Length: 429
Image (cartoon, rainbow, N blue to C red; front, side, top):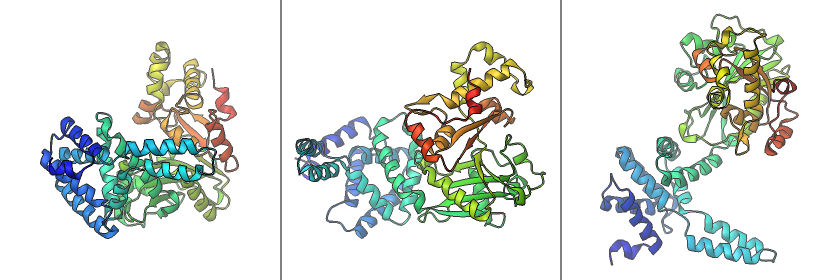
């Protein structure tokens, strides 16, 4: 019997052998076993939190020097070797099923829940406690993302990380800071770098977005104090915006703040690929709204001016070929054009009815509607830029955050009904 076989339970040995057979292209079997041993040492039961953190730091130092293929081998070890014991899960499940309806039900449920928690979760917790550990894990998950489609074995690790990040990065734990022209240059540069909705073209462009009639906020995590996780850009206006062009006009005079009644969220950018899928929830919008209302009590309307990134791709599959051919130059279509009317109808259908697994098909719609907004208004030529035309034939949409109806809208969405305004409903075919 080898040292490995003597030290490891049979199920662990079998999983490791399977990993060696299926992968191990970058690390030799000997190095793969050593890496597994070092990962196991991080969560060894007899090891203190401090010592576990030191072990994690050692793995992080090795990882920093490893090649992409070697790193992928480590991801596989974390995904395949640190799983809940299936026999323990099976026994706990049977005990819980037998205890349902008896005084022992609660205790059996606790045991079942504990049995299903994988050692992988403890491993991630130990890494997070090490200096720089949160940054390490976020960057590692970002590096994993392109590999997930081609290697489903990494899915378990990815889902576990998403679950843990959802707890660690809850909006209640984040610090909200205003970004202004007087903020450190390094922070303004990150706004330029991470802007994901409307590219920032110059310093004059960014200065316009930080002018007196604008507000820009960044959300920060205590473990990443100098790294914004989310940027939220807001325009303060006297009515709901219908086009992004005047908002991005560097030569436009600032709006009169004394007349501002409407806050338009025109860009929300997540900066960390490693936090993909982590929902910051309606608390993100609420915190910005509360901050704005404290500074500008006259604000009554809170809405977005949003792109519709999936519209054109969806229509290419769903709409008649004849209509698609007539949409070569949508900006030239007049107000009474039947092609224009048809496009608005298809856009209303896309936003108001199309779902996937019960959720809005469009990614931006999914975010705002999930936070309690409703589809309020479609805007013709709202974004006439090449990007806007490519995504949605130039259309943009306003999502309205009616603070009195957020819970109602979320309930509707949970029941499979997308909240829409009468104006949107009138556009249906």
